[in-house]
Length: 395
Image (cartoon, rainbow, N blue to C red; front, side, top):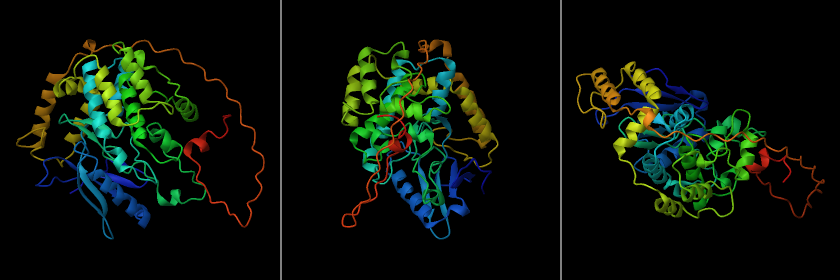
């Protein structure tokens, strides 16, 4: 038995499916659309499934993967909770920042989740992790996914587009701003690349939900320019409890180039030495995040009530109930009792006035290049994303 689609993208759709006797959690199926079951897409999906198995204990759990002649689907535990993006939006709109102890707990979890990334990097393309790829589940555990939670193939490009002679290799704007400098420039990623990617997440978390470089609508090129120049849009000091030492470490963590941390371990050690107070408990962290994102959490619970495909027992959420509806009712009452008054959370400092970006001179057209000698053919070279998007700027 299956339900109505939860998400539909360019290459796949996500559908709730009936629970299994050996898995005490809701399940979803992500299947390729019939029009996308080309051999290249089957191979790509199968490869991503193998990476998902190696993401570590915090990964969204893959139950099965079948990309063969008759089936083209993942089945994995459904993520129910709030994503990093929803937490960031709640922080921006409420004007609050996370308390330092909660911030430290989440930062530690993010760094643990990023630890396997360098070993999983593929030479042809990086993993597309965004603020939709990380979230706090309703059982109190943080989850990571190879794409978006509950939609792993959301940013995968269909073969007919990827093979188009005029396709320039760009990824979605969401993905661009969580890529490393190496990935943007189409160079192989290094251990320092993972530091930058983790640093971008931690900066957004610390700054009350503001990404260091990403702007509003129609600002992709301006945002990339800020990134390449390490010109942050919202300073990390908007967190009123942040120490200068911690601010310096976070700034070094989001640098596009120069003196970056060489490894995630070095970044983690620097942060551990600079935190001004101990980490919060998992329960306090869950209560604060749930309180900030209660509207989004309620929408999740409301959607679950309409789903007839929930297990009688759900590990970490309810151990026993006569019906899933009964379990949901008890769960919602328990969550309401744990909500924290937002007035007890620190407020974000006043945002700086927007700075008008100086108009950059346009680059002069390059001189014509003579044709290569027949004896020395020139191998084609793929331009990096940075070169393609910023080619009209003067360097």
